Length: 102
Image (cartoon, rainbow, N blue to C red; front, top):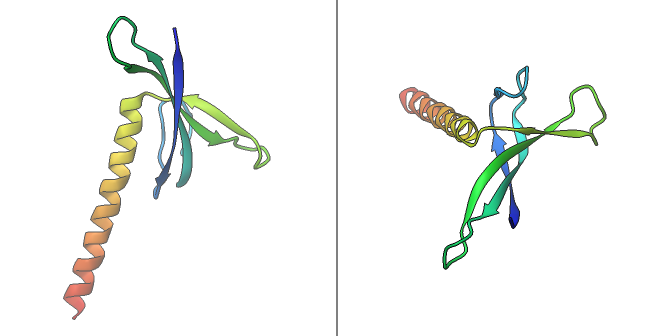
């Protein structure tokens, strides 16, 4: 079975947690890798996601160390959406406070 890996980077403004890691992770940029496999038997190229990984800095190690943890894609999507929602709420609150001061 042929496969590929899609890589991206996410930026989170707030600390968060994931089910495959015991602890709270700090805000920052995180590398994401999504492994996909080719769907065979159809007349066009199509891939299905089979695994999603997040790269974390290794806690208690040098900055050059990191660890890859498997994460459920839906859990990652929820983390990204929650972070964006909290950022939007904070922006609205700031603009409302600023408007009421004028």
